[in-house]
Image 1 (tube, rainbow, N blue to C red):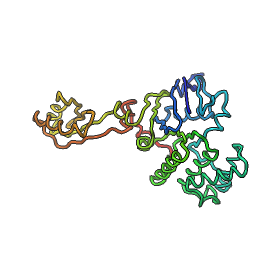
Image 2 (cartoon, rainbow, N blue to C red; image 1 turned 90 degrees about the vertical axis):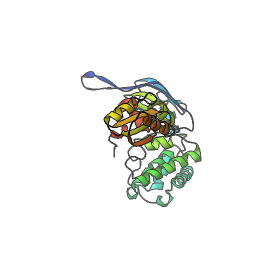
Image 3 (cartoon, rainbow, N blue to C red; image 1 turned 180 degrees about the vertical axis):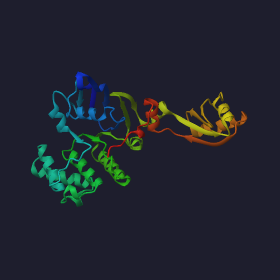
Image 4 (tube, rainbow, N blue to C red; image 1 turned 135 degrees about the vertical axis):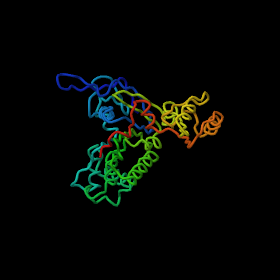
Length: 316
C-alpha cells in the first residue's frame, strides 16, 4: 500500500544553506494495517505525510502509494487516498451533507452516487442528525468527524490522518478512535496516522514507526519497541544512600542509584520483584518502597532520543 525508498526532502534557507527535513527514509506498509507515525515536533512527520499525499515533491528518492508513483502519477495517488490534515477541511457556508456530496462530485462521482456515499459516511460516523447543519454549529469532536467523513466519501483504500484527535477533550478523542476502529472493521481501510498522544499509538496501532531528525529510528509493534528499547523496570526506595549503593551493586540485579532511589532493568518486572527483594534482604539492604513498572512508548523515545515526547508542546 505504501513503499518508500530513500525518500528525501531538502529546503533551501538563507545564504543558500540546505536543510534536509526528511533524510532518505525507507519503509513499507501492507494493506489493512493501522500505522502510528511518531516523532517530536520538527522530526519530519508532516513533511513525510505531505510527500506521500503528493502535496510536496521529494528532493530525491521514490515512493509508491496505493500502487502509484507520487512523482510520476500524483493524480493516481490522490484518487485512491483520503487525507485529513490538522486543519479543518469543511467550509463554513454549506450544510454538512451538501459538503460531502460536493466532495464526492470532485472525485468524479455522479450526483446519485455522491448522495449515497454521503449518507453512508454520515451514518458510519454518527453524523446523520447533523446533515442539515453548517460546520460552524458543530462541536469540536463533530467537526473532526466531518473532516474524516470528507476524506472517506470516495471510499479510499488508504486514509492519512494527521493528528486527528489533537485539541479534543478526552470524551471526543475516545469517540474519534471508536469511529476510526469502526471504519477499519467496516472497510478494511489502511490507516496511516500521526499523533502526539502516545497512549493512542500504544493501545490502537498495530505498528509504530518513529522518526527523528528526518530519519526512521525505530519500527515495530509497540510491545516490541518497549521490550527491546526500554524494558521493564523495578524501582525501589532504599532506607538510605548507603543501602541504595549496595542495592545498585547487587550482582544478580545490577542497577543505577540516584540518592536513595535505585532503578533496575529486568525482562519481567512483576515476576522478578519478589526475587529482587529477597536478594536485597540477603544483602542487608533496607527497602522502604518497591514498584514494578512496564515501559511506555515515551520511555522508548527517551531511550532513542534522550528526551521525552511528552515534553513537546502539543499543537492546539
